Image (cartoon, rainbow, N blue to C red):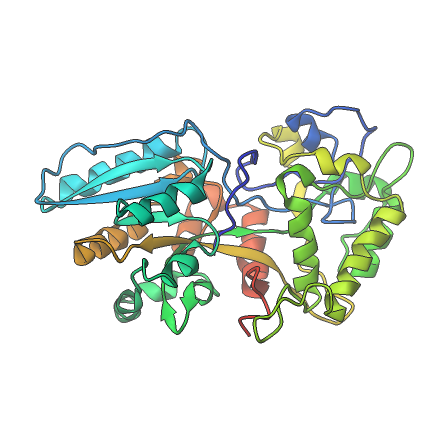
Length: 402
């Protein structure tokens, strides 16, 4: 399920700033310069770019209420978190209006919900019985509220999409993270994922090959470092460095939990090996020491973007591959008085929400395979994520689900 965005997160459509700096370090880089001065690879290879899928907080905040049209006898409340740029809520409201105009018996009220105090917003609403009928939400929120009997299981919808063929349009691993206590409790709609990116031009200038193993990654980072340059950078101010550590653990066959679901962070040898690798990058002088204060870039110059590319999944010392992802979810609440109408809206939304990306700057990547036919996703990064990373990605509760 989805990692909730930090209130200070910012994004570059699909690329999270973390590309390694390849020019002389400045004391205070702007977000645009953060990409400009990056060399790049996840943690070491001059390619520390992690895909930013989490959305930024707020984007105008407030709520967008009352959809025009409709006038139906059933009113549904849909709370949608801020997953994109400043036009995201506008696009979401337009989509709801389209639904209302074509479904005269149902009127959906759209509310754009900022990430600031999101937890208090939902817990207070549920506690007071004023929760929405349906919402998008943060990481593992569905499981938390399902355990208190406030979330409606969606097993029947899974059966329906399997029968009508839509199930096959979802990317691999889409429904696994939606499972809890033997039920599909939330619905997948987008993916947040962490991947390594690199600057092709800096690699070429340094005569460095794209790494395929951790040893190659470390060696490349060392070669790209020196004279005020660093082969590895990460944005620590918005949690991406933490995500990199989890990514390394998963890549190495580890994870935060053991198979029984117990916390296994500091005792699993695979995790310890991953943490030591990260520490080695720092000790080598390959990691930009200012990374802890960086945030993900929210802009990328076209001349820079054309030089950024994806590093294919690297093989860990244990011969495993993988990365960290969250499958963003939509929740139907058990308190709804109109479950059938809510499910009908959910199904419509899932089949018609591509404008969230094409017009609303949605940061998480689509979970529907057919959406990648759009020209927006015709890039080597998107193609590499879809074909190489999604099949090996695991959620933050990896190992505990196996």
